[in-house]
Amino acid sequence: MPKIKFLLPALCLALASPAFADATVTIKNFDYSPMMLSISAGETVTWKNLDGEPHTVVSTDGLFRSQALDQNDSFAFKFDKPGTYKYICSIHPKMVATVTVK
Amino acid sequence: MNDHSRRDALKCLGVGAGTLFTLSSGVFGAVDLAEAATRKDSGTPLFVQISDTHIGFNKDANPDVIGTLNRSIDAVNALPHKPSFAIHTGDVTHLSKAAEFDTAAQVMKRMQVSDIHAVPGEHDVTDGPGTEFFNRFGKASNNRGYYSFSAQGVHFIALVNVMNFKAGGLGALGDDQMAWLTDNLASVSSSQPVVVFAHMPLWNLYEPWGWGTAESAQIAQLLRRFGSVTVLNGHIHQIVQKVEGNITFHTARSTAYPQPAAGNGPGPGPLKVPADQLAKMLGITNVTINRGHKISLSDRTLA
Picture 1 (tube, rainbow over the protein chains, first blue to last red):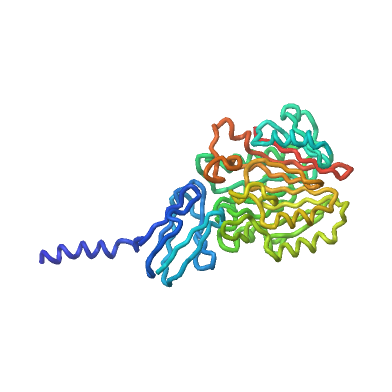
Picture 2: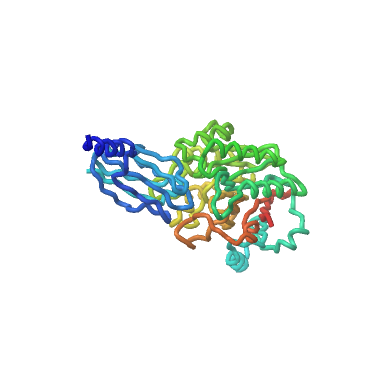
């Protein structure tokens, strides 16, 4: 009985928590950080914008596109296939970065 | 053309709050705002340009962009001789949201002009193909974004340079639009005044911050044969001007917030200034034309 008591809350916690980021990219001072991210297939990347200026996350091959991210907004994408994925900010296209999926 | 005076005048350019630049037949001069207040804009009203209204923005640099837009509209409505239409050179909204477009439309209804011609800024088209922007402003161009029209003997061309970005790139028109532009200009007489407007600067004014257009050299080449060309842009939230032969490139102030001068900071973000300075860095541009087909640009700040 005590074992179940212990297990249940732990299970609830696991079920209740959202799919948490396997990796995070911070957008700050008009930069994606890290600019080159390596992850494994099946993982989720979360981008978070810390700038007062909005940014977007738009893959150059059309695979993913965020809305305009205001300060503290996030965007997440799960990468299923291996490959190198280049993306830019469509508001400030000088901002370029990649996600490499193994 | 007096190169020496032009060079001196160019040196004075900056985020000048109290300076009015007037331009007449390719020669421009700086006039104190105080003096200009008593001087009438020469010629007949042609249109007024507003830009970068950024409805939806609510950060420190200006927590009340609707208020400053209203004041800008007041400035338009207070012009002694009102123009029949306005041109909005983009970034109507801050985040491309429907509610932001709604608010912008509602506020701009107060402007006493019969038409508003708008081109999108990059903030207006973050929802993929810019659906919301084209829902509101797409009719004039059949949703292509670029189009031309005539008014008072002037040939107007609206261009879109915010929907063809490549990584690390400047603004761009894309092949289809360049082909259209070439074709469109081919049937315009060299003696007809031409006004071109687009959101991002159509000349490469500062590449590290993406302030420019990939096809700028080809565009200048197409425009070179005309006797009078005025290129009006927004995007940089400050006035920068360049004269190249008969072509005058001129950017506009925002009605929402200023940005730093090229290179002054990590990027082209909002610039917070002391509260009593803000209105001096926001404004509109009144454009008039006189009988000699000379187009005059008169920038006015909100204070």
